[in-house]
Image (tube, rainbow, N blue to C red; front, side, top):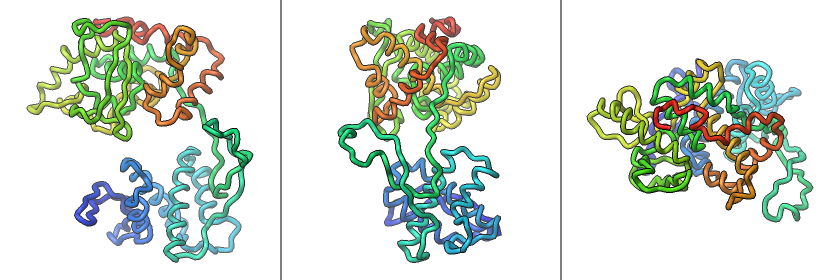
Length: 387
């Protein structure tokens, strides 16, 4: 009997929950303990975004599949062997499946939560993990200096230690190669917008055509133009958590976006009888999926042509890294703290998230990356015909 990872439309109290994860045996019998955990853990609001539901389902599916292949029972927590079930699964994930450390950590987190729930339900008396004290990096938040913990925290002993890798990004030369390799004008502008704004992939996918204008005709002054990302304005903009924010893009990029909207987008829009709000449309004249995943394939294939391993979020890292370099170098002329500006531009809830880019540029040894401040528009050499 084989385990199947699936989804269903769950209806409780008249409310529908589409895309709810479920585990089934191929005989269509339910994997009851895991599915009861899903109902408890997901529907009580432990995870704010429904986009994370699939990750939870995948974690439990992967764990139960591991147990099935090795003829193990999930509730055999007192097996009397040196390795607990979770320790064995962790080592298998690293040594055999060759998964990334963060992937293993995320999956183990959900599996541990499942066992906590199982113990609460009295399905099992013990947990297949213990706790230990580890040294953690002390935060820089408010009143961090009076924290008496010494940076030591209690963690589940099965969890791999955290090794935070600094974000990858493209150099100026790699940016030029990527944009030059995007011969399709639609794909080129998708990449241009991502590199010139730091938008997330779902934000690029839903960026409304109504936000694009000719700054010359609008009488807008200055090198940069202000764009209000407002999910509630009726134009279909999607931001993380539905939070509005203001971003700034270069005047030249906005002119090119307007040129694209007039001369290229209209061709695709005419292929559909319906009027669609996003700026970017696919070959059928329809919007890309709102989660932006379809953009990843486009960016990845263009990167392969240019000899680069690229994905959409890497373009966001590239924008953030180079923009912070420029702001830091011209700090005396800026009216705003560079990190604060970048936090607002990227839509980070905490400046701690933005500070990773500060750590990154502090470790840069190659000054070649500093060339990015000459504007992305100059890097592509006006290849869009309107620079």
